[in-house]
Amino acid sequence: KWTFAQAEPVKDDKSKEEALAELMTMLVEYREQGLDEVGPRHVQPYGKEGRIGKSRGWISERLCELADDGIHLEETETAGT
Image 1 (tube, rainbow, N blue to C red):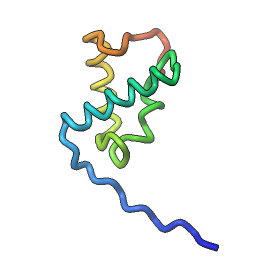
Image 2: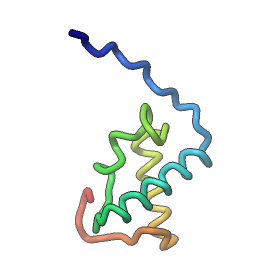
Image 3: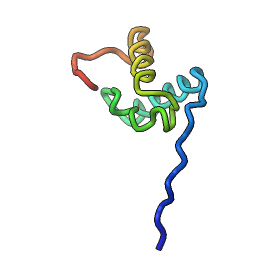
């Protein structure tokens, strides 16, 4: 019988470009999975100590910028999505 050891936290050492590339990859994956909407709840688990390596605030700002630029996203009337 084993127990899981405490995982080492992932450092916020990704560059902004690397983090944005990872976010874009995730958006492609979500689209391929057939999601109709994506929001902070979809990326929160992958934030600062995860796959993207940046804070929730940073991620939210990038999602807004992508929607404003019409890249992958467009804004909805649904809050928190």
